[in-house]
Amino acid sequence: MVASTRIATFISKLLEIEICWDTSVAEEKRDVLIIIGGAFGFAGSDILAALGKAVEETGRVIWVQNDYTVIPPKDESGAESPFRAAFRNRAQRSLSAVDYWTTVTAMTTPGTTKGWRIGQGSFYINWNALTFDIDAAERTPPDWFNRARGDSLLYYGSYRKDRVKYFNRYFSTPQVKCVLSSPTRKFESGPSNELVSYEPKIPIRMSTYLAMHGLGLYIEDVKSHAEFHSPANRFYEMLSAGLPMVFQPEATRMMGRAGYDIDPFVVYNNEDVKTMMDRRGHTLEAQRLLWLERARTEYESLAPMVAQNWEKYL
Image 1 (cartoon, rainbow, N blue to C red):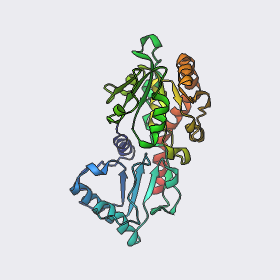
Image 2: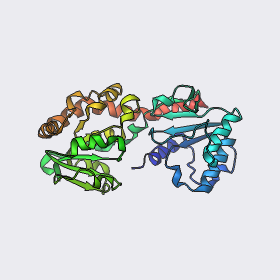
Image 3: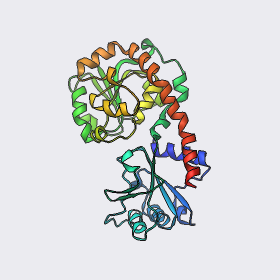
Image 4: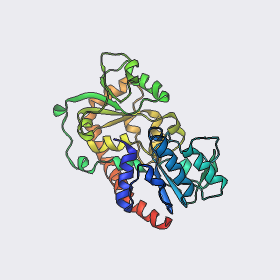
């Protein structure tokens, strides 16, 4: 379920590059260092110091990013930690700018923006398509009588402050059963309703769990309304698992830019959710017909796209 782990494994196998996760990253100088953006706050001071040393001594650095909330260190900052200061030191020594291989289009235009120097080798790539499950997509989705929660609306994922107004929209006075799944306990202090249940984490295989439910709710961040960040992992997971989706209206513009017309499946209120729940079979058929092959193509094109870009990079 951890995106950085999945992406690191994919890149390592595709490009035949070792994965490093400890202080050995600083033991020798390298021509290229690929950093997979993740939760560096949990890495420990020794590893971060070693990584900072590698950043300063490597010829070129690539930052792989699939989430705008995992913020890369800036080249212009007052950071004191060895890891973050290393990026400023690279800039001060006029070393090459970091190249961003990212789902965030704002980080793909070479130049300087908001304290980052964006290298010439930067490009947009939809890492989120890696969550498309080929095996699940090829199976016939279970019918509603065989789904343990076939009459429930599922939301799973992060609890973020700018999504609270959307949570309140759909979960304060629901007209169908709702399941909220997230590792955080913040949802438990949210809307209180007998139709809403909370599940701390997904207890079984992702595709199996998703296929238990009747509808899945897609919500994006406020920032994603204005900046293009690729469809979320949840979109590809639900589509391949056979879970029909309903969408907040605010997501229409960016999903359309990604090539997915979600307008027929937008829900403005809980009455719309109830209507879509009654039509979930038709919705599933329509979405698989409209989107399944496109999502499969996005998934299958990732490897040749990355490999080709890597050859150009070298």
